Length: 287
Image (cartoon, rainbow, N blue to C red):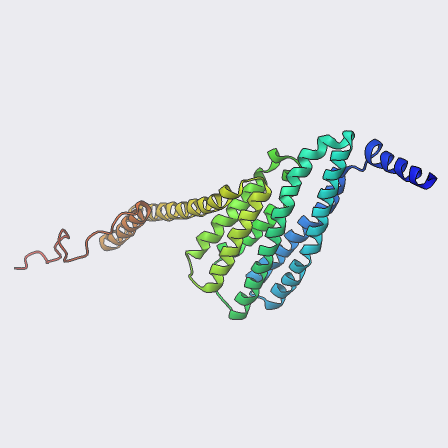
């Protein structure tokens, strides 16, 4: 009987009067997961940059170890929530803990997508596939986003840097895909965008809004790329006129400028030479 009473008193003191700090416990298990996930993404980025099979294989091995870290994070959040419910002194922590509970589930999905990304890096290295620099750098953007998640999960008002990095990753990856259509690049882009969608949900974006945000980021990147190309053409034409290029060369620059404008507006191309509405190319004085 004394043993039961002693145990009950100990539980009462430990859970109600002097409970553990659930937020500190949760952070203690969240930090290793985020750091290891970022390091795996760094390693994948290095593998893609160097087209190195061995580095990609190492990254896949590390990615498989993320499951145990994710499970510990989930367990710490669950214990924290139970502590918060049972202790009046810790109930104010429930909002932050529930926010991290949602994040834990989405981080688990992100870890799975990163494993697939590592497999894609292995295949790209084996095939010696050409990957656009923008697509490779998008993986580095994901690592930067992961490192910014801790402050964002503690305080949603500090989520700007993580969100910016996530959307930049999605935009860069998609823009890079326009430079090549090989299968390896398509797989890498798909996994970058899937991981970006997961990380947006970690930041509290609703599931039905995350994928559209990723698509919108990709569209903005394409538009920005077209505008930049058109600005370069404009600058080149101005430079051509300024240095007094021969007339036929200036005409070629202007044709390039018109082509860039058509691409930007999405308008139909001008009629081909010899078609209705095109300017006659018959030399002056010819019958």
